[in-house]
Amino acid sequence: MPVNKEAYLQLIPELRPNNITLVAVSKTKPVEDIKELYDFGQRDFGENYVQELADKQAQLPGDIRWHFIGHLQSNKVKFIAPFVQLIHSVDSLKLLKEINKQALKNNRVIDCLLQVHIAQEETKFGFSEKELEDLFNTNLNELHELKNMRIVGLMGMASLTDDMDKVRNEFKFLRILFERFSKLPIANGKLQILSMGMTSDYKIAIEEGSNMVRIGSLILGEREKKN
Ligand SMILES: *Cc1c(COP(=O)(O)O)cnc(C)c1O
Image 1 (tube, rainbow, N blue to C red):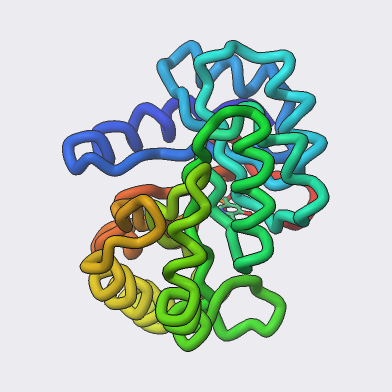
Image 2 (cartoon, rainbow, N blue to C red):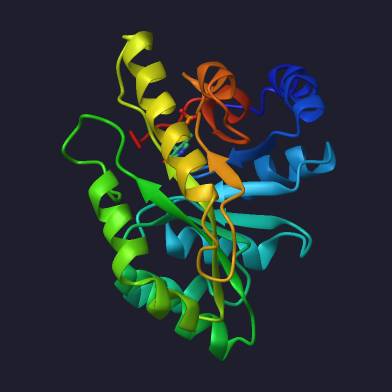
């Protein structure tokens, strides 16, 4: 499937005036497709698999901002720590500590989003509301010690459903958490990024306050593997 230039060129004026960052999700797509969007000016790309991301990063221009959006295992952080721009999918304190450790080794500060479980599906990763509260209430001092990472926002994925009211309610819920926790000075940062919305639901996500959308199939074509 080729890059859908028309869709891309239509999307930009929908997003840019509202300061919404587009992360082009390029998982499973070849470097040639990424280069094509790059030549249109796209710089933020998102990947789900560590090995695939590391391989692509090595072959593509150095000014691409790489976002890691998939489930991240602690033992793999070291492979992306030298270059990753933003990790969207942090779901434990243990992972934050490992990111901090690897960032320190690379003499960097790595920005992170906490993934919040907003969908009904059991399989989705992320903090629950209660777990987020616990993280900030009981571990705030510990978080402040992690000087090489910054928590800069929240990420969520809505249920995979045609019920758009349900999707909207899940995004509303995340927005409320975001507003609430944005008031706290958290872990060397402040919540500023609300990453929500993909091909099927990005318009709703934007209406509900998203300022970063992660869009793959709309602009890069359907993927073969389900993911
Ligand atoms: C694959 C993926 C996307 C993009 O999905 P599309 O439906 O192709 O836009 C966004 N976010 C995450 C976390 C993903 O895994």
